[in-house]
Length: 184
Image 1 (cartoon, rainbow, N blue to C red):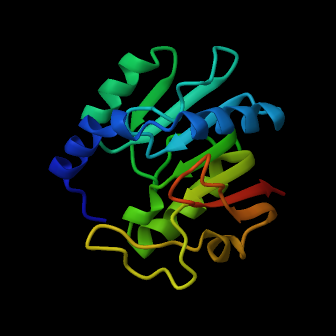
Image 2: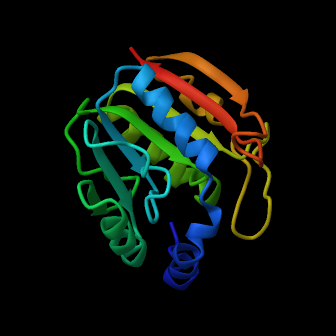
Image 3: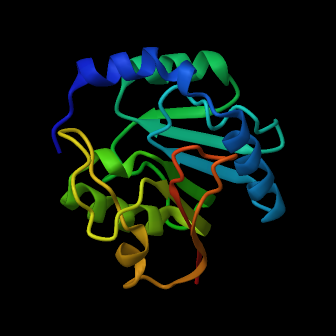
């Protein structure tokens, strides 16, 4: 996996403009309704998707971008953030109730996504959520991104599909595919 630090530093600096209050509210309500108390966002950036969780949750985020993680630590000081890769998550097996990605996997190559799926499954205790720009054949969007069909990547794992639908545009304007799985 190639990592362009300059691209991701700029992305982190512009991340506040991507803050989607409706998505963060939806996500927080979902996690609460599933009775989860620990949450991990992979590719958390500056932590904008984690900000609505209150102190009753144990919040974790991982990202490769040190600049983004420093901003996340300022924005959510009681959370734990790690500079790590999706392919090597710093957690014990089945240790986090709810593990999720939000438009991260669209940026990664196939090998990294496959290793990441394996790691998400390993550390998830109860639920896994992928919110990614959807494409059945995973064709390229541009030089940086490709569409993803996350459901097909989970078919060989012991999971039950809870939901696999496009999110409503009022919650996520780009209508990412919402793939929620319960680990068996």
